[in-house]
Image (cartoon, rainbow, N blue to C red; front, top):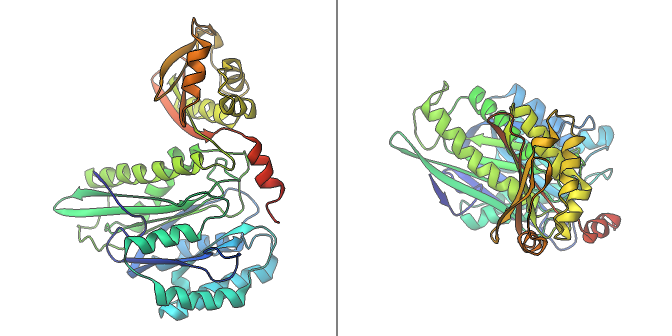
Length: 406
């Protein structure tokens, strides 16, 4: 596997662009990802009962149609809680994009992110779709522009791409994602698009992405809020020329592993860029008796506000971690837990068999002062493990969300 430069335009046959259409103030606010041939489509979406108009549209299209040609995305307005008018406007956005691409509206998926409750400025968006079609390119830079255009409170764009060998063919997988706040399993306030030139059946593509999110985007949290617009779409256009993967075999497993590398890196970038965050906080639970137990414990630790504030303050307050494990709902013996923290500075044991270990508070503070910090909890019950990603909780999180609409 080779990590390469780029995102959604890294794979063969994909074009993209991001533009300023006029939805937001002087920032790119519309993006397009387009496959030059129809691509197999699959996706996963928010578990929130309140679903935005584009989420409903995409779920229907992915279920009913084998392929899609494009994904058009806007930032600034979420088109959520907008009723029948919102659904009409979403359809108009898809139809306008389809007209400018000379494809069917049923082959255009839509994504929106931004303020909930506001109607799309459909006239602005209609003009924007024309600009998108005119300016799209296959260049790496065009993919980056698309990643920039879907940002809301993100402080940087998020892309990742890899090459793998399947048979005598080079397969590319690339993706982009946005998300900084309203991030909590399952998924996040994310818009994510992954593109690949692999040839694979739609059923296996859907199975691959559905399984993938359980260990990637479903394992991140910033603020315990699940959005109305969470969308992760994957398009596979087959232009790499490999023999179509139609069963679970070595080639399928290789694809899934590479896909996980892409989505894990995008997920970690989102967690690290949590609103107001100063560092990435990773939690690894080891020695669990089941995967479910490991997942539950790791998520409970990264979502604890008291743990997150301690991480921000570089305070090795390990009691908060054990407390978060204790109310997670997972059964374990607290008198057997070992707890470690590590970063580029080093690694130390804070807890042994449920009690304080002999460690230096000064050294622990130095470890926690790094930009990426990991807590490792060993519950000594089995061989299962799980990893979750979050961030510290700072004053700036409150400031950002206190005046988000203004």
